[in-house]
Image 1 (cartoon, rainbow, N blue to C red):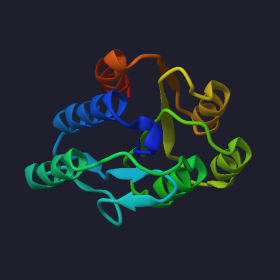
Image 2 (tube, helix red, strand yellow):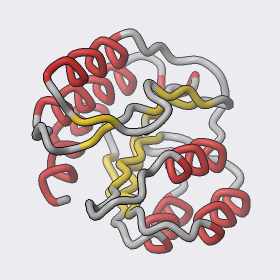
Image 3 (cartoon, helix red, strand yellow):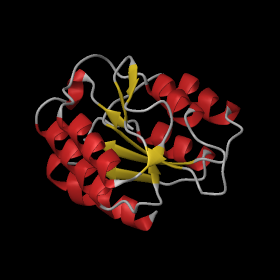
Length: 166
């Protein structure tokens, strides 16, 4: 899940998209993926995650390469969409959630608490304006981990490190 709100413009967006491209390159063919982008709306590449075949990865990379920053930041809406899109099967569900912004903390936490699925959410806060307590609590509520990446130059390596840990 990638925040593409207006505040992500410039280097933060470029580094976040490069990080997403690197994560996509690390997927195995038995992994299932989706790319969800959000600002004050949510757009999904697929209705539900798909097997990470070469064609699907190529399509995801193309989708990511065209993302531009605009709009506000609505974390609750994006989280709800990502959680609802998970497939119930024997594989673990993992969501990487990248954002630089602040949002309505209460709404986002309500979404996390209301979800009955077993998806783990790893939140990645980008930049100095991150609402660390919110992203930390979201990750904790959904059995994930919060990672803070304070500067643009560290986004790519930081996101890939999180993916490698998962």
